[in-house]
Image (cartoon, rainbow, N blue to C red):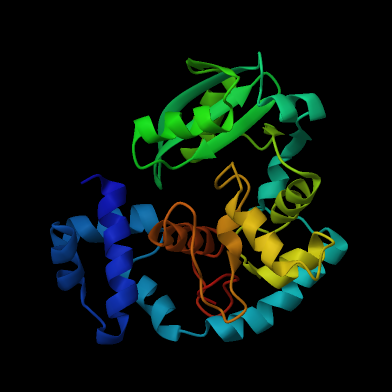
Length: 285
């Protein structure tokens, strides 16, 4: 197992056993590491110690967080506030396919793709000359390429790394400059593009609900359709669909795995507010 897989398994174990308050030795055994090694690796990947992570889970006041955080998110949406950890501070630009490109499935469109490793597992990134068109966490490399071919049946696919791919690698490995930009070249309906643009307004370390996202996207009564558009998001993490949860406070499903969603949300909350328990915006607030 990779380090990510072990930590993901440890997070999943903590979620299902936090009421029993497993100690460091027990969690280390589950990960097949010594307590010292597990403590160090967990801190490195999750951003907090195993004990503090259990404290977050034990608080179990996601509903309270939701009620408190909604007003914070409303304020952010209404005023356009921008903080140090927010994804839109990376100046992500969305550029839609032309109607012709959309209709023809990318006929004669060159697409370069490559694989890389992130704190959340292996990923595939694919780009056109205009920007990123796909970023996913695949089960296998073969399945990822097959999905890319299905989505772009007429495009010319080439397995090679480009400057944008290197930029994504730097982003995932913490070497991303604040002056850098991401551009995305998306194939979607006008409705989907509105939803994906609304996702970019959710600050890192915070969560929103499908109903609130629908309101921000300008389709308040289309909550179910908004949820479908969230699930169809072709660019994982950079378009942060993992920050959307159910009205009840439950995390809900995630296209690339519920455990990975927990890891993403917990990692972001810990990174934005590393020393806070009560004041931390996000799921574990």
